[in-house]
Each structure stands twice: as structure tokens, then as C-alpha cells.
Length: 232
View 1 (cartoon, rainbow, N blue to C red):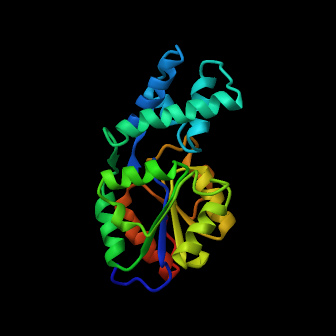
View 2 (cartoon, helix red, strand yellow):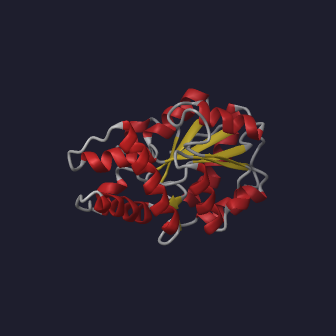
């Protein structure tokens, strides 16, 4: 980071599938919810591909796997119940992806502001960050229920940048799915796409500005972005 010019002032992180590997706890919670509805459990790998657009969408997808379509009232009720289940085990198996803690520290030490912009509800997001002892790295946390609209709408990222006091051209989004790329580009922010995340689409289909196979590559991406060099 020693050669970084003042180009990137903030890194905005997605959470699930980008910074933390939370699929096991999410899958356990969804399967417990399905069991309460007398529905069979789903394979955790299948649930992994359902993660990314908030709790209601996760539940819709889980029920759709059993050809069940909930009405609005039932979906709201199931979403509340899911959060009760998940809150009890949110960090039971959830872990940071390799290199995450070190990279967060490196960016903080370099004076780069950091924020979370996720479709996970804000309260449980903060619970996970605290449980993994990384909450102090983030000046702003925007969850899926913080604002009237969530990703891929640009409002969450635009609000994140406003709260950080950072212009879009000085920020880098780090995410694992098409919705992160869509939101970031709609906000005028470049995207570093992580190839190990939960997004089911092929990485090359996202048209992200950068692609990284490990979080330890991110500081070099930030440095290259700041100096205008291309990274492949």
C-alpha cells in the first residue's frame, strides 16, 4: 500500500460470500424454517446459490424449490421466524474468508475508509461483524432493511458514500454477485468481483472492473486503481 495515491478513499464491502462465509448458518436456518412448514431440507450447496437478495427472496427461493408460493402475509411471517432462528446461530459456523482480517487491517492502516453495504438485515449484520470482531473497521453499515430500497438499486451504495463523505470516483465496491456490479456501476463506482463467492453466474458475465481470486489480492487492486493501472 506504500505507493497508493489518493485515488481510492473508501472500500465498500458486500458481506455474505464476499467478506464472510456464512452459507452454512444460513442453510441451517432455512432448513429449520422449512422443517417447521413440514417441508424437506434442501442441500446446503443449493441454498448457497439462493443467497444474495435479502431474507424474503431467500425464503421465496427455498419454498419455490418445493413448488410453494407464499402470499405476502405468510412471507412476512416466515421472514420474521427465519430471523429468530438465524439470530441464535448467526456466527456458529460463519467465518471470515481467508485473508480477510489481514486485508481489513491493511486498508484501515493505509487510511482507507471501509463500509458494509449488504442485503442482509442491518441488526444481524452488526451482530455478525461484532461476533467476528471486525466491527471497528467499518464507519458505515447499510443493511437490506436500512433504507426503503436495497441492492441492486443504487440507493444503498449512494447513501453509503454520502455517509462516508466520499465521491463515487474515490470508492471501490467489493462483491460477489451481479447485483453488486449493477448497483456499483449505476452509482459510478468501480467493482472488484470476488470469484469465490455465492453468486451463481459465471464471473466473466458480470463485466466487473477487477476480478480477484483471493482477498489478499485486494490491496494491490486498490493501489492499481489509484494509479490508473489495469489489473486482470
